[in-house]
Length: 140
Image (cartoon, rainbow, N blue to C red; front, side, top):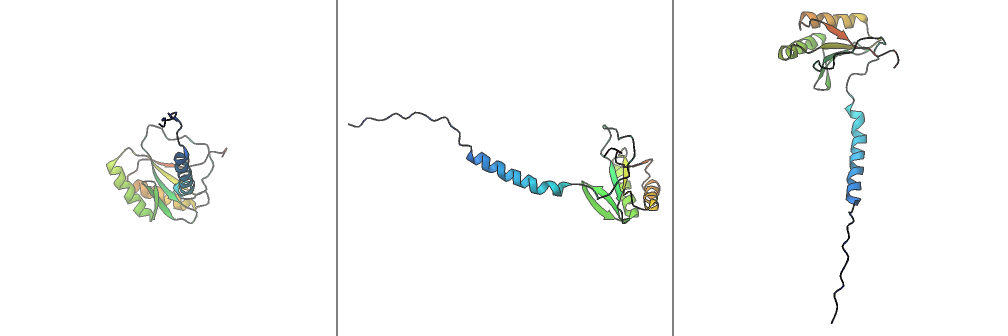
């Protein structure tokens, strides 16, 4: 009669499906990474400044671009609105979390008046006790 041939067990792992999945993930991340950048494109003025305390809440960022348009960063997404609407939105958010810092992200080429008007509205309408100004470090 026929004898059964005993096969030796193979302990290899087929990694081809894992490589396929990794390549798909790599392509997804490469495509989505440029889309994730946050913020309004502004050229911040260069100056040495003190950084925000790491223990503080995530700051509310009000932005003014080079054309004088106003934006407010809400949940990581910048929404264009009037300066008055920015102040009203900041007031609403400060009512929920009063210790949230507020900073202005102004383009270096924007009119000084546009930044000052936004700061005045933030203090008058929103009741922000102090407004910070974002800058780039001189080394960058």
